[in-house]
Length: 100
Image (cartoon, rainbow, N blue to C red):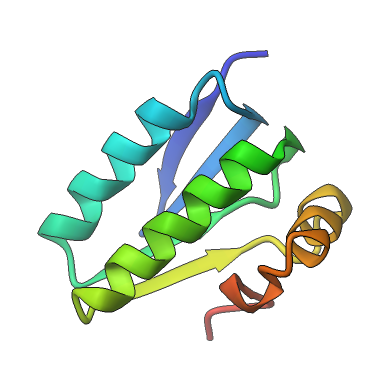
C-alpha cells in the first residue's frame, strides 16, 4: 500500500504504511510545513503499520517544531499499533488523544 497524506480541515492524515522506506519524504514534507505554519497536526489513526525508524522520525519532527516554538500535535493513540510502538520506544509523550 502506498503512503497518502491528506489535509482534512487542517489535520494531515497519513494513510498506509509508515516505515523506513518513506521516512525521508515524510520528514521533508513535514519540515516544510513546520517552517511555514504556526501549527501542524498529524493524524496517525489510519496508519496500517509503523516501524521504529518512522516513529523516531516523527519524534525528531516533534522536537524540531518545539525548538522553533511551533505547535505540533501527533494524534493517533487510538491506533493500537501506533500506541504500542510509541510506548515501547518511550515516546508516548509525543502522542495526544485529541486536539480540542
